[in-house]
Length: 131
Image 1 (cartoon, rainbow, N blue to C red):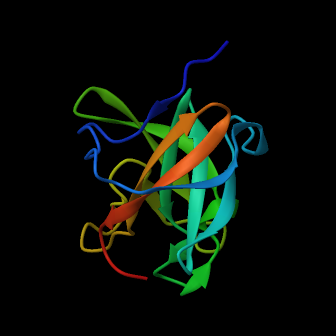
Image 2 (cartoon, rainbow, N blue to C red):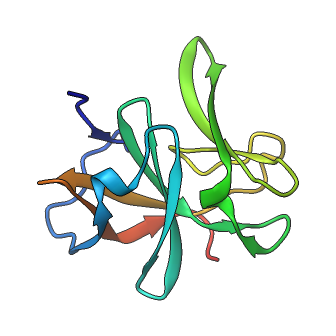
C-alpha cells in the first residue's frame, strides 16, 4: 500500500478549515483531476505517493487546464522534484512551489492538501499568484 504525504514541506497550521474535494481513488497515480473549491478551480495531482494541489489556471494561455497536464520529474540541485506540463503550450510548473520552470517570474497558486480516511482535503489558504 502506498503512503501518501502532503507535498508542502512546512506543516499546515492547525487552524485551517479543510474542505473535502474528492475521494483519493478518483486521482489515478501520475494523474490529475480538477475540483471547484471556494469558487476557484484547483488541480489535484497524485505523483510518487504524494498529493499536490495547484491552481488549475495556466497563466500563459489564460485557460483552466493544468489538471489535464502531463506529470513528470526533474532534478534540481541533486534533488528529484515533480512537475506538471500544461497541455496547451507545454510550460512546466513545479508541483510543490507552483514556479514555472521556463519563466521564473511566473507562478501559480499552491494549495495545502492532505488525504484522510480515503478523502482528499484542501486547506482554506493558498500561496502564490491569484488566478
